[in-house]
Image (tube, rainbow, N blue to C red; front, side):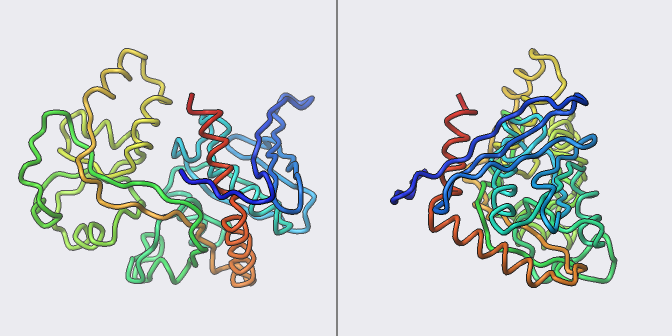
Length: 304
């Protein structure tokens, strides 16, 4: 990763302690050109974390367990979690972040019951909504500027012959596992909607791996880093985890690098203003190297 160097040292730090009621108190600490900032937060309910709660506006964010980028069990809850808190704090917002199954998170934001969905892949203009049939996802959501990226690829059982795989069309009638509600790549999603593949839906990346290892499908699609980390963080016995990790492999080359976005609910009256302010923070953090350094510090501390 190339770091942006300048006059300032940018970083993000994550601290955790316990409040008197036993729920953990959490601090996200970052630096930008304005100086050092400590964003106080705490766990307020199962799977829910509240930061900068005295802000004039506290936004509801819906996310998922998608380690190593973001997850409750991930080290420091992942760099995407920290980045979201820092970006919103920069613009004066509080953040209530709740972890859900992805399909539930989509429903909440597309229906306006939560304000921001993240991290989201690029949404094609013609992508249809599973929440409101007959409408498009972008009828209900608007995307911020991108704040990061990650790979997406097919993953197979080790030894499964993929020599027939030349392009996506060559996978016609192949049994492929997808996570319900995920955007994948524009071409794959278009072909999937056309019925080109025999698709089996999973509830999560870990569930998708289970489909693969139980021979329900021959390929799954996802971020290889997420798939492997979800196995490591699962409740399987260590011996089973080792076997699962040894049994899967990524099909090369990867399909593409997918950019990561925040998806803002259009049901908010101030959706355009919120998008503008979030984009300002993202662009500023990119110019100053803040996001790069959040990732760098997280990798150095958590990926030992």
